[in-house]
Length: 256
Image (cartoon, rainbow, N blue to C red; front, side, top):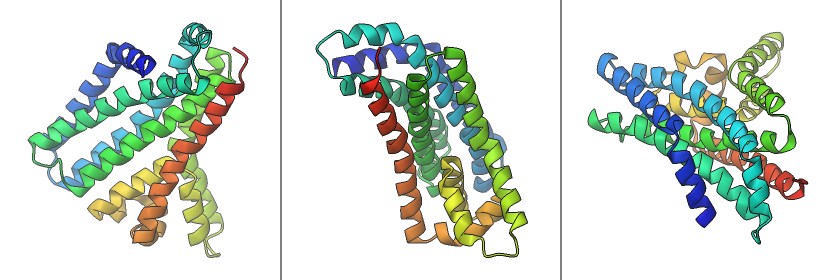
């Protein structure tokens, strides 16, 4: 607990967390003030949130772990469990960014009496989940890749893959096999991308399927059901747990 407090204090005092909060506050306030209609506001927020949160989480998480190697080596010489160190580092990075995002979006939404709308609540929940997802991935990369430049490069490539390339590949596959039943394979491919899961969850709350693209149109009926909501929530939790578990195992086995 003491180690977690130290990491939280160290991260929270950094300017990046404050800039993160101010950016989301300014964007949310601007969209709520100038955009007419909840759906348009949510779509505008979603385009920013689902691009920036994965990028910031995976890049900062990877960078922080590389920059903390001397600190980690020092802590590991003390009588403290490696799992405790890993969890403290992970939560110390993820929690400040989650809080900055929630406050940055939540405060303007509260001011404009939109904080408790289903779309805003879903956006806040999925945005927080994506922070934990990509911080988990970042920590795994930071552990298994010793070179900082290589780690940062791979982190950027993974972000580019999940945000841009994946949907393009999915669209190509669905067009190539349009003569075959593709609903179940498409659902499976959506589950393999946490950003697609989050995007569909938010768009379903505003019933704006026309803006969801081909992927969203295909799976709207499935993910709009109670089972679909439960499956998407469980999938996001697995996206957090699996990279975290693999990263923890690598951390425990790594020769620092």
